Image 1: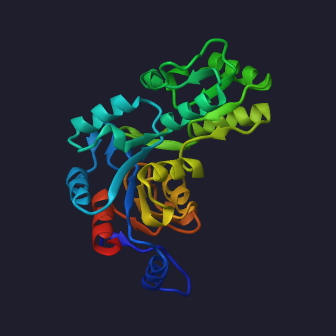
Image 2 (image 1 turned 135 degrees about the vertical axis):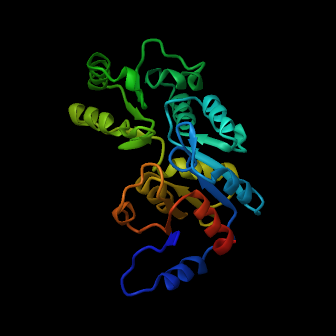
Length: 279
């Protein structure tokens, strides 16, 4: 069976489902994670393209929300189109975009610890004499010298801005460390707290929903990360659907409270649930 309900005590899933939907408005938007949900690097999740096409036939807005910091929005769009996903650039909302907006708002000059492939999303940002540290996933730059430079800047008062704090993500060769452990290390060493701009932060989800013109109770989020995707979305009032692809590990659905609205095998199963039960 593809779909499995969240575990509950004393109440049946059917009752929980009906109760959760009773006070909700009609579904207007579906937010979709990318890496681990639609694809893993250059391999699409089986059936994901057809499922997305089916979802687009429904009367809902679709947007893609991603924490990826290893590639610019343009590179990400190229990758998705090579995998035959029907995606437009304006439909992608990234944590890189949110980080850039924050830098512009605060007029920071950042030390950009991001992958070279993501730098173009910061074109035009002044990086001379940096007075802020912006931290993304940049494996080629995670060496002692660079991290120590960031450490000293933060000690001298520079704010630490984390594009996101994911613990790990899924590559084709297995799980790999995300930026979260390194950001946490800098927080520990400097006795400061990072400003996080990507998922699971409330401002990230509310901005994505604002762009769509809908409220949280009119939207559902699909993702492979129980904490960042599902719990983050549910904390702002959305429904969250967890898929067992990408970084998912057995039991992840039990690590958040409230549990996911639904846990299912893959993105196509999530779409089927939305089409059959939420519209």
